[in-house]
Length: 433
Image 1 (spheres, rainbow, N blue to C red):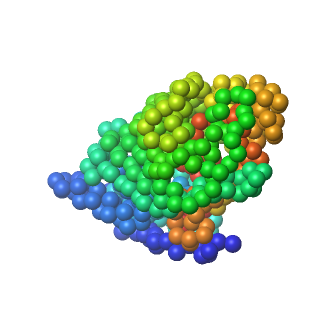
Image 2 (tube, rainbow, N blue to C red; image 1 turned 90 degrees about the vertical axis):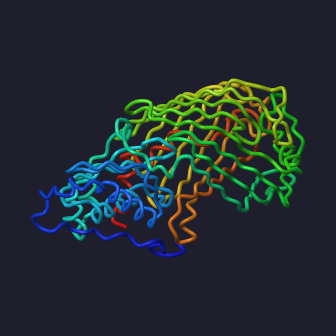
């Protein structure tokens, strides 16, 4: 049961209906500073509700808003709150609202909503389904290229200092191991889609580094994890430069370089095809990485590998999501990973995965092949306040070297799909929240 039924977040801006007969009033277009005043008002109200204005363009009968949602787990809730803000601010002649969520510089989708529908449906029975049926959700690659950006966003530096918990499960000597400490994380947005990011950890207590020494007969790409945990004090677990972009309609691209994770650094590239209205997505990822020194600072060891996968994603009925990744893993082995998740409209996810490669069961070692369960838990469920933060938990019977994949932030499918049609439809009830 959630900590607070309905949540305790910021109230929404109510719909403000237009005065009758004002729909053809265009006098505001003659005011020299009218657009700037409207932009400032939208920016202020979005910030009040935990969102950020990226760009805004106003025409006599339409408005296009590029918005960052840093608060609401449901994309539909962010879109709904933005639409209600526009009913309060926009002149009466502005009928069409085009709302474009921006994630890491990528325009994830474009939702076109009629202002008249919002005014008519706010208190209508079954208004969630009716408003979804009337909305038009499409690709946003061609939207926003010529918009006037919010000058305060670039460059922009953000940082956070807080506790972290790192866990290890199913060691025969100690079924649960954990480290606790402090983590300093920071991002520096240089331009749309271009950002620097880093994480520095200082362990304070724990026993993850006390795990067994590896007995692997294939390259030790993951089983040296206890050594990394023992010697990384402090540990630079990430320091990267990332560029993400809408390559073309239905296509998204990403390039990430630097210290990609605690054990590997190098270059990661990705291309994703995912139409907004489709249940199917197809991606290709290629990486060149080198194993980092155990102290997780700036040096490297003498192991490097080219790794990559072709991936297919599909959203089945009843909120089941499937994924197949085929390619080369960190130990140089070839194979495939099959994943199936059950996702709930409140943000919880439960799934299982299994990986089979050309590493024999004997060479893999105990467990025979990589497998496990994974959970994604929205933190707003416990705090009662809106938050996009989730806790990711992966439970493996054993961590071995076969079937090991690079851990890199910002993979594109998870970046964009929350604003695509299938995910928005499942949570559209929050449009009016």
